[in-house]
Image 1 (cartoon, rainbow, N blue to C red):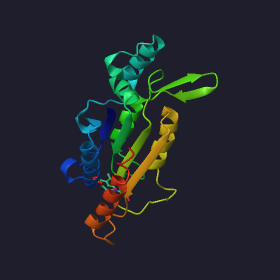
Image 2 (image 1 turned 90 degrees about the horizontal axis):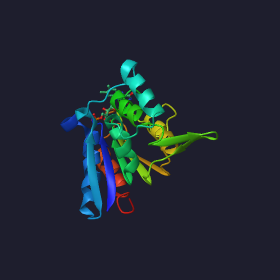
Image 3 (image 1 turned 90 degrees about the vertical axis):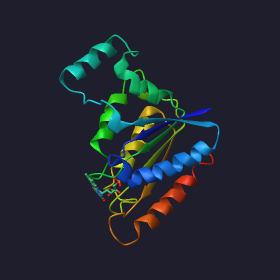
Image 4 (image 1 turned 135 degrees about the vertical axis):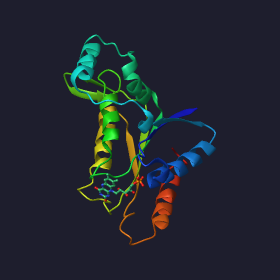
Length: 196
Ligand SMILES: Cc1cc2nc3c(=O)[nH]c(=O)nc-3n(C[C@H](O)[C@H](O)[C@H](O)COP(=O)(O)O)c2cc1C
């Protein structure tokens, strides 16, 4: 059984076009019997930024190698997944701060990455991470796009060898019907199901 961790950061929930894209991909994936999807909806999680006492607690726990502490549960869950799917809209040239909060909480030395005198190395089990997003403007291949590019860099940091992104671009431009653009992105995502 392939364990898939689905990270839902579609802040607008039922209104979210990104979620439509993600659910189409997950439905096709789950139709294949050997994939088990675990869902993590970030909007329902008590995620906190690393600051003040919350930061200090992390430093003392890590100094004592207490990786089993409940606050590291997100990092342990992430590092043990066989595949990861992240869905988040394009916000402010990247993605919502809620996803960054999650990332801040899973980047834990000794769980998702390690470090020695040569530098850092990834400790995650996942073979691939798929990022699903929708954008108001057209940022395909634009140097201004910082969300997918940042996640791709993080995959290298975490030791996840393959990164894919499927984006529906230009949803708010009015040049093409939203459904037409979404359908094209869904087709692109479904093409990845076969060997996921
Ligand atoms: C807070 C916020 C910030 C956004 N920032 C951008 C942006 O920088 N560039 C862009 O092209 N669209 C931006 N958009 C538009 C969204 O990318 C677009 O509407 C997307 O499809 C929303 O996804 P959703 O339907 O899943 O919520 C922004 C939307 C919101 C609400």
